[in-house]
Length: 229
Image (cartoon, rainbow, N blue to C red; front, side):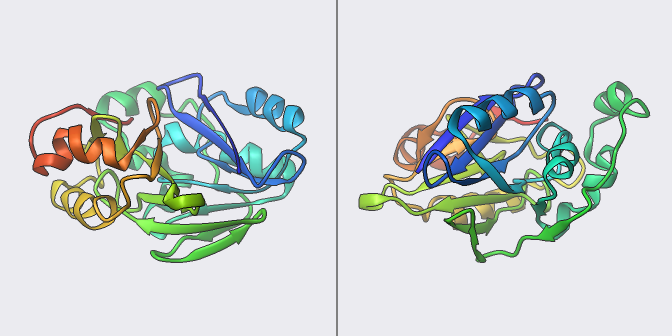
């Protein structure tokens, strides 16, 4: 499997391109702010053809470029229904400060073709088998995407659910401490230690490392860093 990740121009949001191999179809995960030119470079370098855009949640720093990326190629955007309204009106999930920063200055539009993700669904896209885990807490529609790998080394695109040494913040509209704790317990801690985690912000990690060192997993509530828009 080919995975190329790079940070967006704002908020350090990771955009990922995933394909079975170079020269194949691919999926784009979380195209954030200012990623279009870099994305085009990655696609050209590896001779990839996007088949879909997949969104871990509806926050603006993960969805900003979804409409132009999908529109330029006539492809579908996938998002959980609990966050779908944020595609057209992302201000509903922003803090007061961020609303003042972005409000009224950016064109918001839902892509022409939107499909809704369901918990436990296994999607066959671009030659990949992608399992969807609904993991609310950061937002109501937060999801993680899992892809199988050899010898148990699966890959999990965790969005803003889980980071290296931290988790996503829950104090924005749609966030919930209780739902985050349940997601960490039922969707994160149940994964194999060998699972590689590619988060929405920051460096990669593994479930085993986070199980041992992440204070939020060790205590399900012990203070530690939270991140996200």
